[in-house]
Length: 494
Ligand code: FHN
Image (cartoon, rainbow, N blue to C red; front, side, top):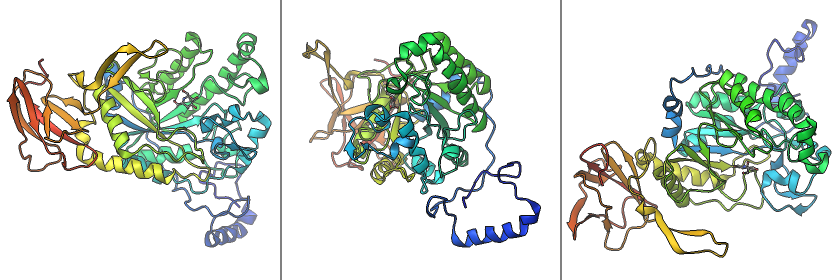
């Protein structure tokens, strides 16, 4: 007997004949008293899903690109979730460690498609609790969640009508975690979006990437198999994601192999048709709404457009049992403030286990970041780029052995802005507590530590034409703290 959270009276499959209603009710009571168990060995469902709630309708078409981007520009910090069948082998196949990122195990081992498919029969993440995941993102100070609805392995993590190779139809779990997450996000006012691997699909003969089972990609391209895959699976799946899960803040396409402008445009049209407010990332293959940098690639200087860094918290996206090397709260805070000061967003990934649990170490570090943001978040959310730039560092005079330029980064402080305010987040304070401010003409009308309710003034004086802020090394936070300088005029004059 299974618990089916989304069964309702319209479902033919689970309709109970009237004559059996009484017996059915007794059986139902028995299940309630003994807990809800799976057909695969009576595993307790630790956290049964909350009752289905109605999802809000999609947002109306924005009046301008600025209006469309507004939430993204404010948000700055998002949670990426890579979750799929690959979390079962978790970096190991047939007793052997498979190097590389966890979600690529099918490709890297390699695992034939017929063997990989079998993983679905074991997938029963009984500890999955959408409420807890969304709460964790909120505790971390994250403002949006992007989850893999289908990664390169081709397995849909939601109840797709387009392909039975999905978590609802093909696993003993028989729940739709994406629906549960959409509902939890709606309850928490959290933006929710989908990663969708549009080009690579290692399960389909026409999808890109699986050359072991299905031969060279070029042949799929020229034979029409790739277009058939796009039209029969990828495009309709993107359409159903946009129709069935409430407002979708963005779709995160990836690895645009063989994605011509024309093929990409079909996806753009689908997104615009169903949810014109949904953003498209930078990896569709045709222009999206913002740029996605390379994985973990933080630009050395400011970029003027809208952009986002997808990043790992350890060294893999999908869960690997041998990788617990979490970035510390200090590293994450530095990267977040650094990215904000360069005008971007930080989409930081976690890889839940096959039980549906976000590894505790990653949760702990994210929550520590959230605590920091509770105090200093005004220097991040909705904050603009640094008006300076010299704090980022400079290019070395020599090049590396490949002939590439070398950037010598400086990490002492970062500056973010709001009208009339400069936020200096201090990561490395010299022993004498004297911070040389960069040159700017505006008067400083007030200077204080963010989060100091008394706004005790910080001394700023001038030596040799350089304004110096006097702060203490042992300030209010061991990782970093932020000072706010209120200035005359909205913008910095240099
Ligand atoms: O191949 C994928 C990888 O598995 C992961 O999803 C990352 C996230 O940015 N994107 C691709 C590699 O860039």
